[in-house]
Amino acid sequence: MAHTWSRSTLPLLGAPMAGPGTPELAAAISNAGGFGMLPAGYQPVDTLAAAIERARSLTDHGFGVNVFVPSPQDEARDAFAIARYAEQLAPVARSLDAAVPAPRWDDTDSFDAKIDLLEEQRIPLVSFVFGLPPVEVVERLHAVGTQVMATVTDADEALAAVRGHADLLCVQGAQAGGHRGTHGVQTIPNDRGWQQLLGEVRSVTGVPLVVAGGIMTATDVRLALELGAVAVQCGTAFLLTDEAGTSAAYRAGLTDDALDELVVTRAFSGRPARGLRNDFVDRFDTVAPAVFPIVDQLTKPLRAAATKQSDHQLINLWAGTGWRRARTGPAADVVAELTAGVAPAGG
Ligand SMILES: Cc1cc2nc3c(=O)[nH]c(=O)nc-3n(C[C@H](O)[C@H](O)[C@H](O)COP(=O)(O)O)c2cc1C
Image 1 (cartoon, helix red, strand yellow):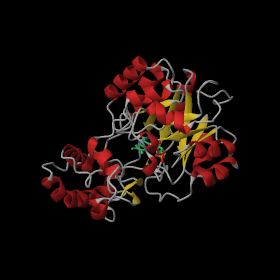
Image 2 (cartoon, helix red, strand yellow):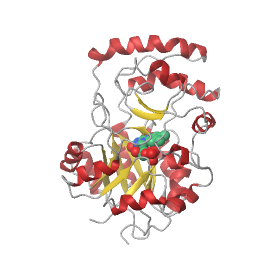
Image 3 (spheres, protein in one colour):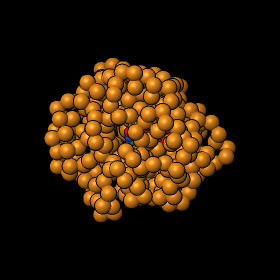
Image 4 (tube, helix red, strand yellow):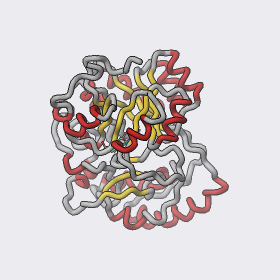
């Protein structure tokens, strides 16, 4: 099967990063010979449409879009835990002059409208995370020439993805910064790195595999390709670049020497995500319920207020295991460093 990145394109995808991911970053990665990915998560469909238009104005090369698969909600089961978490968050929100909003249980992250848009826009690669899209959605995207990539974190999810007609898989290891793409919200993610998962997934499926998690150097990239991946997907490596939308508070957190421990926590969103341990994690990690995206809704205003007030102790500082190696400067330089001595995809 042909890959969406052409033969002259480097085997490097810029991870879609809800928050720091901008059209400027995706376009810069594509212009440098990689393949940029725009995040669609948490955005209204109009904002996504504008981001696609902007990225198109910045690059003639292809880029992809990443969509969150809505997590099923069970209000009857979870309303009490959410109300309790909202009460626990309230004093922190007040201290920042923010409020904890009422939960919106019908939040599907505009999934259907986003699929309509992506179908219309004929995006070369659409990736999904947090579960699998309905086969009918995959087929609609295939019909307009889009390749579909599913994010998986173990062999069972990989098998289900291929049965669901995914063309390729993003095998996300435990090293990854940000949310683990584990399909079930309640599932406790495994702690296996992409190196191990690659072998497990390859034993159950023959589709092309992209690997992600802690990939920060050309040596890591070459190892991934030697082990049989068709490409890597890197996020943390781009967080401090000029084109990333990483806020000043987030940048300060990533470069604060006093923050030296990574944790996997549900405290910010309800789903397990890897980031730097700070005061918010210490306070809420053990009490946050596993309810996504409702917990994200509850914490969003206080995180926005903390960002404005440059308080990196109260925001999510997503980071992969290689965060200390993240560098500043143009994203093109990071692409060049990561792919030094690496042959073009398919070449
Ligand atoms: C700040 C941040 C935001 C992320 N947002 C998304 C997202 O919106 N969708 C997605 O599929 N993955 C997301 N990820 C995970 C990446 O796709 C990828 O798995 C991860 O960045 C790889 O690990 P690394 O950060 O060590 O390179 C995010 C990662 C980070 C660091």
